[in-house]
Image (cartoon, rainbow, N blue to C red; front, side, top):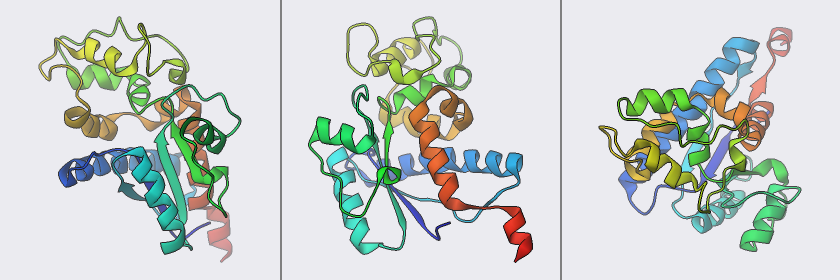
Length: 223
């Protein structure tokens, strides 16, 4: 059990307002998972993560490394897009292969997590919420039917993640999917449990966090 969890996340651009909006979306995404987890398991969440939006992926890595020095007692987490299929055995190996990032001293795989292949895959994991959000005109026929959204490529002619969302939403009243305008609201609405079921790396993220942030009720009673 840790007393503080800090998650350094890629996204939000350079704008303070955009970072604030996306941080709220991520905070709601995590919150609703932990609330359901606590209600189902009766296990107490001892703390909630502090979300830090960092802009670019390189800035996220930089801020994460700085946090290892400035917040040494916290459980610091790096969360970035994988940007491609993950073919390596660990997230740090993937980031070394793709970005030439070296794993900082004193951390392990629990400190590194990936949105595979990008955050948009998480949205596709919850078609019902997409349908409710975009309403009339939403065309889901072009969204791949798969049990593992991490297999949908970020790049490519047929299965480019963002293109799939833009095509599906082009004729809605909200118009086509726009990361800045829509991502924050969608993060706050999608069902984290559905995302975990369709995204092994998202499930890995929440499994890690709950193992660090919970205390069993039996231990509490014993105290």
